[in-house]
Image 1 (tube, rainbow, N blue to C red):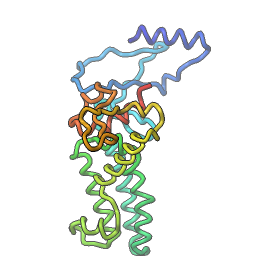
Image 2: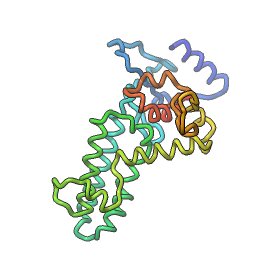
Image 3: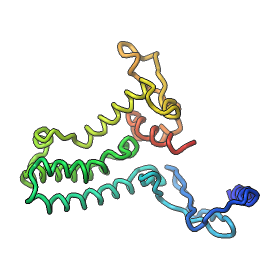
Image 4: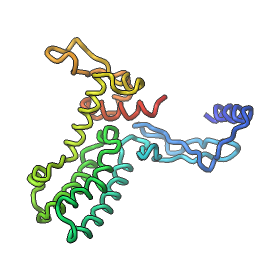
Length: 232
């Protein structure tokens, strides 16, 4: 790897370009156990820092793709928003609190959900708990009241339903060729197993290596669509 980095240095020099090493880092994405000691990577004689997670287009990507860092980040943002809603609760009516929910909490739940929505349930559970707390606050319900009835009364979607909604939208665009061309190659039609719904059943992908990272085959949409944005 250091040899390739040396070639990169030479190419940059020939093209009168340079890298800011202070802002340059790398991350090893793998599910395998790495050696305790790894060789350092160098450019311009300086060591390149290794990161366990990096921020890319607003998403925190872990080196093992479990989305723990991103969900923790979203959790902290929603917690702050809940405090703001709690402070405003006594001065706003239900409809205004609902607007606050859509302004302060909902954007964090939907951004990149097709990608990080494949995380383990014990991680997603943390966001579900915060979402239910927000719903009880809007409905002025008791602290430990069952939230199901309030979701229906307020016409709000639960986190799992939000994921299904965005998955449905994505697949609709996929089937009708409404996605950007690179994303249209994410799935291919498998007519062998399509009986009554040949235009909807899409079960095979063009990224088999990505599927090896997934805990369940039913989650192929989440990670595959996310990685195809990162891999040129």
